[in-house]
Structures are given as C-alpha cells and as structure tokens.
Image (cartoon, rainbow, N blue to C red; front, side, top):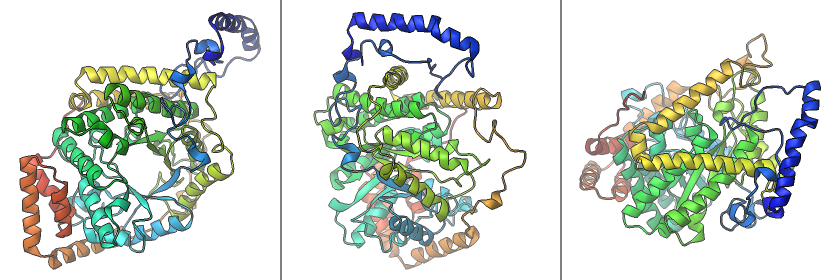
Length: 566
C-alpha cells in the first residue's frame, strides 16, 4: 500500500513497471496479442494491464481506509460486519391479489428469508384504484394490488408485523402505503416502537429514471419530506426513505452516474429537512440507500466502498453531523435486472450469483437476488427459491463473510475506488453549481446524462464492443423455448375482478361522514402546507382508498407532465 512505501520506493516501482511494459510485456504481446485494443469498466473507465503501489502513490491508509466501524467507513459501517450478523436476505415479493402475496411471503419466510420486501402493481405505484379505467389490465401484474387498508390486512394475515421488517418499493403514494402498514400493525397490537422496515419514498429518482411520478417536483419532494419528518418522530425503527440509485442504473446510467446522482439526491433531501428546522443528527441515522449490483464485478465493489467514504465526508464535513451514525451509508442492494436476458435464461442464475457476491464484498446491509425467470414475468416459487439459496450459499459456504473487506489493499481495487469517487465528485460539483438536484432535475441534466449512457451502451452491444453471452456472443440458432421455463401462472382478469369487488365492499361498509370529513381535513392540511402524514393516517383508518387520497392531493398539488428532454 502507498503508506508502506516512501517516495523513493514508489519511484523505483514506477520505473520498474515502465521497464516491464517496454520489455517483458512487449515480448509477450508479440507472441500473444491482447483480446481487444482497450479494456474498460461499464462506466468506460480505462483499465491497465496491472496495478502497483505507483498507481496510488499518496495513499493514506487512515484517510482512505481506516478500520471497519470507523470513519471514513470505506471498510464497512459495522466493526464486526458479517462475522457477527449476516446481511438481511430480502426477496422482492408481491404479485396478483393480497392473498397470493401473503402465500408467497409465508413461503419465503419458511425457506429462510430474513426480511420482507413488497413489490406493488403499477396502479398502486401511481396511486390509482383497481376500478380506475387507467388500471384495466394492470392489476396484480408486476406486484400486488393494495388499494385499501383491508388489502394490507390480507397481505400480512398470520405474519407478526412486530417480528419482521418490511421494505416497500413505493414512491409518490408512500405516505398512504406506510399509513396502511402502520394501521394494520396497530390492529395487530404492535406498538410504534416495534414497527420496522423501509419506504423507498424517493421522488427525485422518479423524474430521472423510474418515471412513476404523480406530483410536480417541488410538491413531490415536500410530501416525501413530510413522511420522513413524521416517521423519525414516531417510528424509531423505520427507515423513511431509501435513496435509490437502483432505478437510475436500471434506466441506463453508469456506475459513476448511479453513485453521483444518488448521493446528490441524498444531499438535496438533507438540505430540505434542515430547512424545516430539523437537527441533522435527529434524522440522518434513519436515512438509507438502495444500489444496483451490476455485472462488472470490481467496479461494483469499488462503487460501494466509494459511496460509504463519500457520504461520511458529506455528512460530517458538509452538514456538520456530530453523531457517527449520521455518517453511515446504510444500503440495500438488488442484483441488476437489466443484466438478465430472455435468451438462454438459465445463465441468469450465474449472473445473479456474481452480482450478489459483489454486493457482499462491497459491504451491503441487505440484499435481494433476482430470479432467472424475471425477463418473462414475476418469479415463480421455484425461481425465487434458487435466488434465495444463492444468497445462502454465499453466506454459509464460500467464506467471503468470514473477514471484513477482504479486497482492501488490492492496488487495483483501491485505485478503482479512488477513480470512481473522483469522477462522482465531478458530477456532484456540477449539480451543486446548478443549485442542487431538484434544480438539476427540473433542467433535465441527469435525464440527459442517463439517456446518453444508455444509448452508448446499447450501441456498444450492437456493434460488438460489449459482449452479452447468449445475446451477441455464444448465441444459439434456435430461440430459447420459453415453455421450458416453469413460469408463474395466475388469472389476472379474475384477480382484477376480485379487487374491484373488494374495493366496492370497502366503500359500502365505511362510515361515509367520517370518510368525507377525513378527506376534507387532508385537503385543507395540504393547502396550508402542513405535514400531511397524520391526516393521511386518519383517512386510511376511515377506509379511504389509495386513489381517493391521491386524488385529493392532486387537487392541491397538481399532476406532473414530463417536458421533452433534448
């Protein structure tokens, strides 16, 4: 490492490496040319043949690495990491009706899942009810339909909400879904102090990536901050936001862009909360992050290590946080959905295993492994169990969890961590010069950067500069027979019919005066700029539906229509 070598030794190593490239390497290249002219990561970072201490000449061990559980947390936020407690194993679950999802959750718990993760169908994601004309044909397709408190009760029937933590991938309607969850936990007799889990609740990434936005940027951020403020005051074990790079990466961003834009989102949210008069050490320990684990193995590991180091600096030096827990970057990881292929789908099991290993070596706190059949539809029980077993094999058989940050000290890994960090800071500096991420999103800056990166990657694949096994290399003449893959089967039309019947039943049995009064109070609170969370929780308990609550807020905040991005 750089700290081990003085300047004279570094110069000797550098001179020796230069001599090696002129002599030994050239002799080998004459006999055995390299496979391609240039090697790069997926972020187009050029990769040299070999790395030495000369590539990290001013490396200060304590400044750049330190020790696990201590600033700058490059080596992990916990002093014991996986030697004491393995990462939480969360399988993204949810499809069809609440009854279907309840069955799947119990199946995964039975087979060793240690944390729940709920996927919602598209109507739920954008805050409309299953009987809305816009929901036709979409109910239960890519996740579970949860338009009322009754549906949430069914999802968690027979599951002790005081003993599990639940991640909910939900954004504009996050306050409503959290209210459903809290109200059902209350019915189970679970006190607020034991309700644990995460709401994604990250509006900025919606405008640049996932696109399931509802409100314009300013009110969208305001609503998300309402949830965070209410949650940190009432739910001490809840993570009220999962600042998400995953969807940014899935939209086509590079690893560097994913890191930079995610941290820039986090910076924006911290500023918004501080502007409310909240002390940074009051809310910062409950912030969490969500990253993609893509297929370029070492780049992903370096990205995770750089992320922890950067966030610790941001929170300590930019925002003056005093509590070391405020400096932690706690994150969930999901393996890359966009790396999965419909061609030769069994290969996806291997891809997922490699990506999951990168997440573990990068120090994730929780992990979701994708199932091999996801290019086709929601995972079957068979595929989901293989994905869960992948995590368990990594945890219990490989030995990679037995020591902390085992790749630390690799000249390549440390150089790549530094390089990714430096490139990410340049993006953050540019976003700061625009006035922060909210302003950058309104100007379309990250949207254009992601679109350009996605276009370049696709062009590289089509022109043979990037290889995907089964797609543009080692292809097969015949199209993979999807019938060989045991896909999940369910009757979408029947599910939609039952969900419409259930919501009609909820509307018919509720106290109409209480329901009307709750929505009216919510509207007035939104108009006054108050924190709307208590009013949403009250409306939920009055059996207002998701669509009714969101429509009430749309009357105040409006609906976002994305302008063309050129």
